[in-house]
Image (cartoon, rainbow, N blue to C red; front, side, top):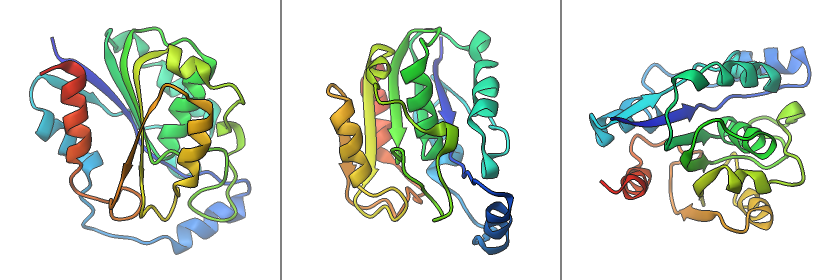
Length: 203
């Protein structure tokens, strides 16, 4: 039986349409963007893992209610001892969902990677809107056996101050502070997370 990993990608959110249009006009474009979030997990973890990557609705102008509906549609396909992983906006999405809802499957581990904590990210005009976390996050820890929050010292989008805010709310979580992940985890390899996942499943 394969170990499942459900990965929620990042995204952006905007209060006003004009801010979103400005983002589209000015964001950097690249034709060569291979990242650890693409096929790296599948390649390094091998055939014993199934990596599920929902394409969340309107990732560049995200709405929490829409993401929640889409996320829950995957539940019938998930097995016990699943690993949940969220990057950036996907991280705060998982944090919010798991702090407000009992997950329907047994969760082995949750990884929140470069997840913001209740302040704007990516562009100055943004606010988190309905992605904003509640004050009590204790249900996250009750939803999983292992909770990991990963941040990078050179992250220019979600600085280490966000890690400290989570640390005040999550007393039993494991915090992993990395030295250099090429900014906001813009790296092609992520051996630290591969090693940790393998330890979780004891392969």
